[in-house]
Length: 616
Image (cartoon, rainbow, N blue to C red):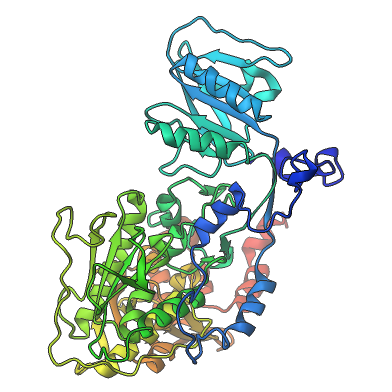
């Protein structure tokens, strides 16, 4: 969205005149309330937010029950950011290689009070532009690229090998479009997923008719929720040149997350709330506002507990973003056995390692995460990585290989292994009986929830030690320090999460494992290469919160006043490095390195060098 689009004047005429979404359809006999009528924008928001939490599931007492979550939801409502206001005037861009078909669609939309501009990408000239009242604007071009979101699409065209904004040909009327109808075999949008307001219905003729009917409703004043919240203070992006975190930028299928001037910026007009950025963010700097973690926990817990009382064996949980046939009861597919529970989510990225481990703690025996064929590749890769992280943890807890699995899915067969049609078979765990499901306090971030769930599973396991080994690249672990560390404290200044810190004026390097994300910036910044990452997860919650002194040395005392001010190893290292330097050829200059700040300043001001510099 351009800056001009974002600054809205609510006193302008466009906000103070009736539109086509009123209750009256120009006939007094048809005057009726809009109750029950679902317009296009309402339908889009409903599809994103999915079913109501706990819908059709018996109420259950507990910290995540509806009664217990009332106050929490009220608090979240206060913190929920205000929705975006989008004004759509019906300005529509039609892109097609078939000139006649594009003109026919433009006439159909024109009858529904939409203003259309046509871009024919057949690669044939000459440039043909028609303007005038009631006439279509039309241009022949070699190709086009479109970016933006509903209410603010911008197009760039290629004409005779020259790329330029479409507005250069059509004028200000093409500076931005509210809607786009793309009838090409390959759409022109710069992204893996199409945003709201961008229609690419072909080759299905019925889908084209449906799109034309819906586009007529996409004119007026709309509210769009802000799906994500960004806490820039927690973001790792821009902290390192060699290991710069760009996960949210790379995973976003619509390009709503970008790096601007070394900082992450989210275009909330373009964001579709898929949750991919929140899933991959290692620091929980990005969180979802529309479907919070606590709401997802409530839905998961209620689903696993809403089973027939005569069923005693632990259930198998299938989590998928594919729509399955009608359920005979909540969470169960009529084609599956009674011991299989299916959780349908609007976006598979809503489910990360925290939810998978929580599901096991809630009583699930096996979990299959099934991504549909329309899931963007970047999201699929991110979800698969989360499954790998959760699988590594459950392996460390002694659970069978394959307790948590990832697979492709289709509407015909909800769970298949890879790309085959082999149904998913749960891993049997003989002798396992249902245990009392875990209860997790609300308000925890992803990392804390993973630790809580792992601790719960550890208490039920027969694993001897609380520390679980994880593969390289895991977001949990510790840091070791070699003996050549000089306590220069460069790592404490570079650590983005505060896991490494000092202990006041004492020459101590302190580490807190609960804050370490294994980002590797400390390894990169250390001049002595004395730091090394140790991936792993400790199920001892008190141990990971306790500060640990990684290295401690005797303090070096000022040679003038005797005040301790640095580590002896650092002074020795610095003195050794600067020997022979042209600025430290004199013994007095070398001695200054062994003074505290006050004594060093005093000695410099009283030195002969200062007199020479002052011309005395």
